[in-house]
Image (cartoon, rainbow, N blue to C red):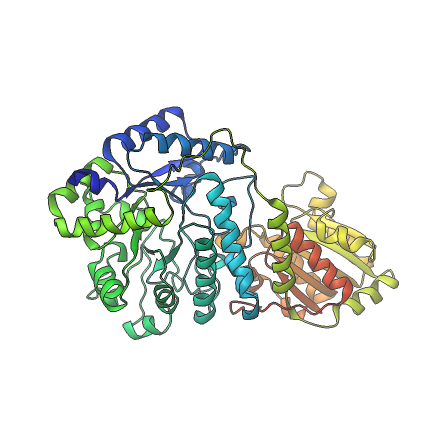
Length: 540
């Protein structure tokens, strides 16, 4: 290869599964002309994280998985050097592609007992097999961030929790699963995005910890990953003044953090990839096109993820970088391509192959995780108390943010038939959509079994739980015997007033069918839950 062709291997621009033919042809041109090293797939331009604030409408496409496979074949055919195909699939392809297998969030896995670490390995392996089946070789996951800030707007449920040892062990198990499926993994976001309160897609978080504090906490999972030969480490867009001469420079652009800390002090010899270079914490720093790409490479990144200025970036690197440094990064990328086999064999996917995922295997795995992760927070012998109330006709079931025909209530109904009520924010039925009406309907019941389905996983706008719903729940908790079952991000428990007054409180981390049904069965069978909260929760 020419020097320019070698440098082209450092660039992993974003590609969008549901993109226009014009944009697809533009990418084909880039692949052919600049010998780029790989691609990072996203669902669509509207769904890219930095576009959230523009409220662009996301158009869903049930054929996205087939389209993804077809695009991979098409792009590979353009490449003189096989492309390393990457995607963010922390909880499976479903993170980016609809109608594909979805696995639990990392926070759900973090609720598992340490003895069930094999389930984390199985999740990594199944995700790897799903990715490989469509032609993806590289999963930009899992997170090694220790989530020790409950106000973190972007990590939270994506982290295994706040126990640094558990995060380290579970991240390594997930990575081993990916590798055993023949897929590369990636620990992110170095040196640790957990204790931040700014979304790095939109601004620059600053970690104020000292070097010693970082070594004792945030860096522990990365150190464990390095010991276990992690394929790659992603550098986060976050400032760490203690490691950067008290400067608020993004780690992605800091030689002190990548070359001195990660390479020299921690001894990491694998691939270093930047977080997406379109993110606002870095994308607006330089007016000159290609300057950001050069600065990121100069700081120590081998792969420039979501690079938006390929031609200009190649020119800047060729002009400014040493031959030794270019060859070092080139060799690391080639080693990764060799590991997944794309340099030695014809890696083209047969375009006639249908995308065929094993949804039954996914469901079985999700069921096993549900059985071991459901967590009891307030235990007042729920089952006996609920059945006693039902015998006296004093029990009602209320579903919040799902209709009453949800899997949880349906599983309970055969043994626990009651009057069922529900509230959904977008329901056109005024009787069911009016909390005042619902409150009056519940006057006849002493005991209420509440199922709260938390609307969103991210904490923005109180997880989109309306103030009126919080007020409604608060009144119920003060005036009724309430047994509360919550489904979703456990941090949402912190915003429910008077939740401590619940007679019973059980938390389930997903609202998947399997999780709802097993929660109901554990209630009916009076089974002891086995999960533990992976993060600290301060209930009001």
